[in-house]
Image 1 (cartoon, helix red, strand yellow):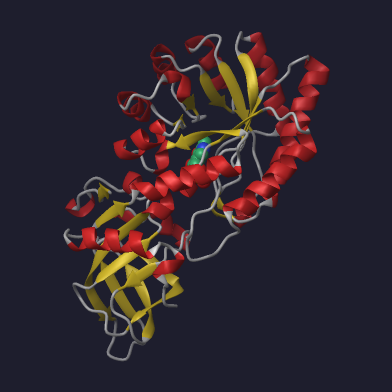
Image 2 (tube, rainbow, N blue to C red):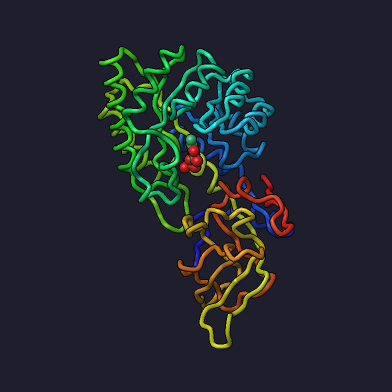
Length: 387
Ligand SMILES: Cc1ncc(COP(=O)(O)O)c(C=O)c1O
């Protein structure tokens, strides 16, 4: 399949990024910050009742943190390292939620000492740590949700707990002197099935009602996580369609007086702003008569493309060379045979593609730089530039 760049970037934006790319050695990712600013506005406009906490894990670059801080974003933080980084950009502790349910007691203390007062949890052991290390803080409990089958990058098996346990934890939070603040979920990243939010919101409503009726606890917040779509090869509904439906689900369950709503977009804010530029190292065949060509490129699973694991995320790949296409296997440069990006899904690349030609991996702004290994086979981490 040949890629139409205009399905992903406005011509002026692409030309600007390409002109920049032409001046730089591969591999690297170039990110257009104006695209991120637009994506932020789009989410804010479509969910006017929600507070946005950018999921920093998607791309922790200072340039992005500063831009989003200026736009009024808050931040979903997963570690003391991310915390230090965003605080050094001028983000205040009130803008931060410690969203990782898996954390050391001393790291909870570190967040507390820095002034953070909002913590996610999904287990009793973690909740007790929070009560000791961050007394009086707000806690929200993450619940398990369905939706793994329809998310390109599922998240919900490792995190969250069943509804009954969530209620037990929120009651215990009050006993431990914490503020039982709300409920969170994440329906899976790049979630294609909008109905996944309906099921999750339904579970949240049960928790809100039961806690109020049975324990006199009035929860105040729903954190709906991420899962909103980026523009990859496999198409999704538009963000407007997501927003319209999710707003309807919320109003059906909670009426017009919604509790505080938090969103934690990562991928949908950042991915579409990036182009990862790589160079073809070799094109080869495994026998004289093999029909299949292998295209080896100077980026791979260990240098930014880990989300090609199980071929989960299918990035659009564009080349300057055009002409007849042939199916290829696309693999990275390292001495690890796991470093194959696409083998089952057949990408077509031009027959005349050769060493030193460039591949442009579109929609690669999120989960590329932050996932890149530091020195496998001596290759340095993926470089990034911000326009
Ligand atoms: C707690 C939490 N919030 C938000 C996100 C961001 O999700 P997405 O990139 O799908 O927007 C993640 C992703 O791992 C997460 O774990």
